[in-house]
Length: 610
Image (cartoon, rainbow, N blue to C red; front, side, top):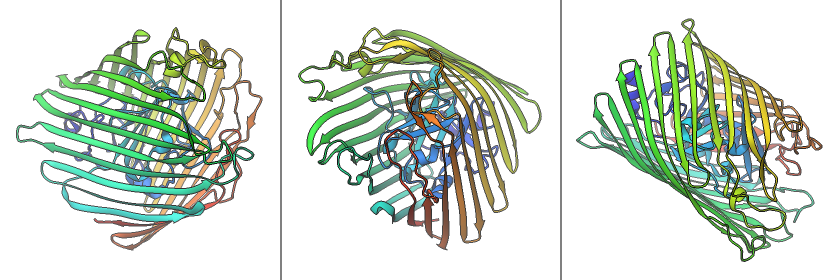
């Protein structure tokens, strides 16, 4: 075991800082560290999971306008949006449902307890330091929801040194404007960061022939802060906040239709070393996913989720080659629903529930071989107990080659809508629903040597007890998903490149049809070149056709998008960026009836103290 890497993090999984870990680079070399796969600090080459890292350098280079721009076309990832800029978005990991991907923000579990999905559309790219994508089941570590995988977002962070300012202002098509400023730094014992940003756009007309024909805008004001401090007795205290609020317009009536939202993740805790072989961390967290909907300017509905959690995590070296990571967690979900249009005077049968879980991960380093096993037990107020597990094995067959194999089980708890929604005729809840369950097999190989890497994996996931229907929903469906993922990166001189390809067969076993909005083929290629002060690059994202419905009657055409970007270093601390999205003005949809932007251009002036 590489005690130095683990100790540098001290249970870095879900930690608010990465001050002492090596910087990541675009070729994902051996020094790239991730923490989401097993809740400990590991290099990407050491982990036995399929992992993709998107660091701050890459985020700035890609110049995304929305968070899903970072995910689209990555290995095993597909997204769909009900139009652009703050509109409902879905993320499908390895062909599983959107609510089968767990979103974490600095270790805080996010998502709506009523719908089950995460609000990906409200994540502000400018406040993000790093994104870690782990493909494959992680329920045996994180509990419900992680059937397809986990996406963890880490907010901006400070490092040892004097305060440094990062500020930007930009604008472009659709009357889009954005601005922000942040400061970050650190001392021998303290790291800190604080930033605020604002994004607003007139957007595009979300749907033709629905409501008015005006553009449907979006605005997002975000604040992020993170601090950690080590006391004289060695105890480290830490805290982090990501808070976003704003308004997103949509089409429903001829009047003003919009959603007021709040999206927040708050966490605080302490970590300490109990012995030379035992590190521990205790934290509390709070998350919010609030949506108040207005149609024709009048209140229409309120669907708010609040979640409180307590986590206790321990890292214990049993021997120099045997590591145990164990923890307990408890959380309570609460909903506040007011929907007079559908519910009238009725209320949900239940408006809160708790879940208590315990897990253990045992890792054995046997030279060329690495073994990992995890087991988790959940006790849920609604459906009782559930046990999940995972086993993985890796072998270093050569200096640059590692092979891996794994098997894991996972589950997804039913949502409040599926369980407790009042009877409104065409929809009602079913309190007797069982969790959706899955098992996944995976084989993978990774080649990693300067100046690049190549990762290949094949997998099969079977999901049972899929929840379908509305009046009431029932556990009736089964799905089988098979896939091949290829991801690679290369850095040579002034050239940077990264590519991914996913082949997917996602089948509804009841009907033989393809699961909706899953393309059999997705691909992405990013290429950038540095010319002293000037840099230029582009991305090609392609998807084959898919179907919008379970019966496969409504076909969504495949498409390919080309995005171009450039930057110029005006001075050591000043940079001008520019991008053109959808260069060839492609007309396409990722969800039936919802428009996507045509060709669009954006510019940004950035000031970064070095």
